[in-house]
Image 1 (cartoon, helix red, strand yellow):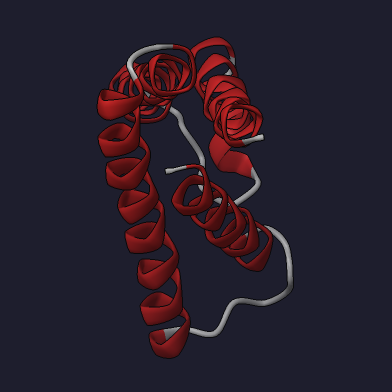
Image 2 (image 1 turned 180 degrees about the horizontal axis):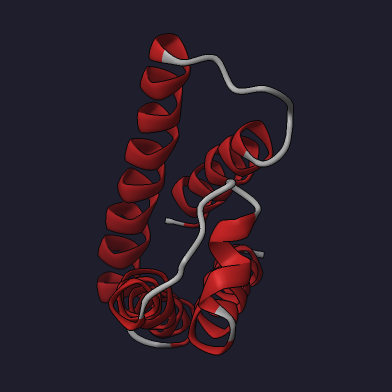
Length: 121
C-alpha cells in the first residue's frame, strides 16, 4: 500500500513535469500567467518540468528501492509539499483567490499528497 501511494504521487509529479516540458504556456495559463518569451518557457520547463520529473524519479526509487533510503525521500518530498501548501495559505491571506481552481485545487492535491507520503514513510 505504501509503495502504491508513493507511486501515485510520483505519477502526479511526472504528469506535471511532462506537461511543463511539452506545453509550458498551458501549465501557467490556468493561473492567469502568460509565458511569452523563450526565457519564460525555459523557466517553466526547468522548474516545473525538470524538477517535476526528478521528483517523480526519486519517488519511484523510494517505492521500488531500498526502504531505508525510500523513507527519507518520501519524508523530504512530503515536507516540500507541505511548504507549497503553506505558501498558498500565506499568499491567500495576502490576496484572496477568485475561485476554487486552481489555487485551492492544488492546495488540496499538495496536502493529500504530503499526507500520503507521510503515511508511506
